[in-house]
Image (tube, rainbow, N blue to C red; front, side, top):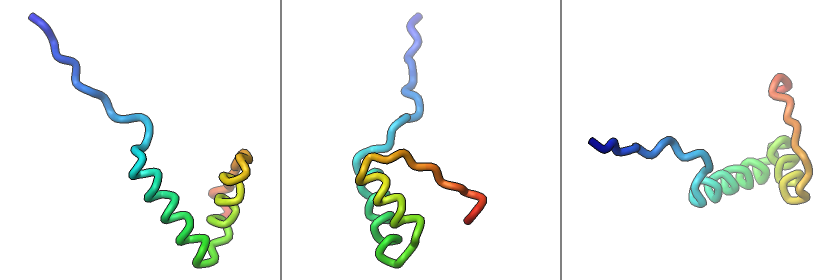
Length: 56
């Protein structure tokens, strides 16, 4: 008897999900969201990102 392994949950996001996240981030930055602007800058410069969720 052979068992068929089911595929587990995908660990990494798909390209479509990543593109959609970038679009949402850019839209938030365009609306003036300071955190979104900071995230875009950090990601574009390959800087480590430390977000304080308690400040939100």
